[in-house]
Image (cartoon, rainbow, N blue to C red; front, top):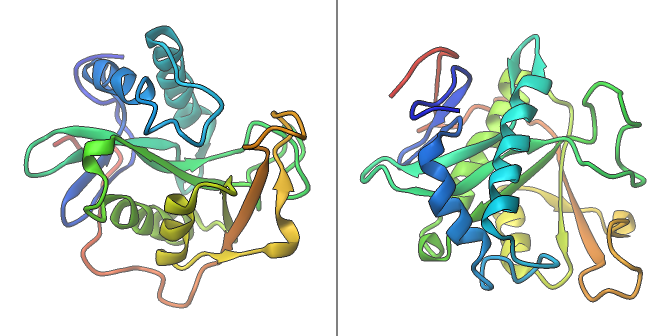
Length: 215
C-alpha cells in the first residue's frame, strides 16, 4: 500500500468519495476500531495490529473480487469537503457459512453483503445512507448482482435503520445466530436484510469514476 489509492473502482456521491485504501488511513482507522462506541455491536475493540490486518484483508478482497464487470470491496470513505477519512462502506463476501451464504470457493452470488463502519464523529449526517445507496447502485447497475444482503446484531438498531433507509427489507424468516459467536452470546442473534435490483436502479447524484482515475 502507498500514499495513493491503488487503481480500481471509485464512487463519488454528493458529499463523499469511496476509494481504495492508503497508508494514511491506518491511524484514523485504528482510532475508530479502538472506540467502544463504534465497536459496541462487535465482540471486542481492535488494537492497532488487528486494525492494520483488517485493512490488508480488505485490500486483498478487491483483488479477489475482481469480476468481469468491475471489482468490489469495502471502500475507504472520505469527505469531499475536507478530505477527512471517516470509515468504510462497501461490498464483501461473508467469511462464514450460514443458510444464505455461497459455498466456499463459489462465485459471488446471493451472498454478497453490504456493510459499513463509520467514526462516531461522522454519525448523524446521513453519510452511511448516502454511501450505502451508491454502493447498492454500483452492485446492481455495474456488477450486475441479483441480490445483496446485509445483517447486523439484533441490538444494532442504528444499522438496521440505515438498511431500511436504503430500501432493504428484513427477511424475518432468515434471521440467524452468527456462527462465529457462542449461541448464548448477547451479540449472536442477527437480523438479515435483503435487496434486489429495481428497474432504473441508477440514482441521481452518484458518479462512478473510471477504474484507473485518481482524485
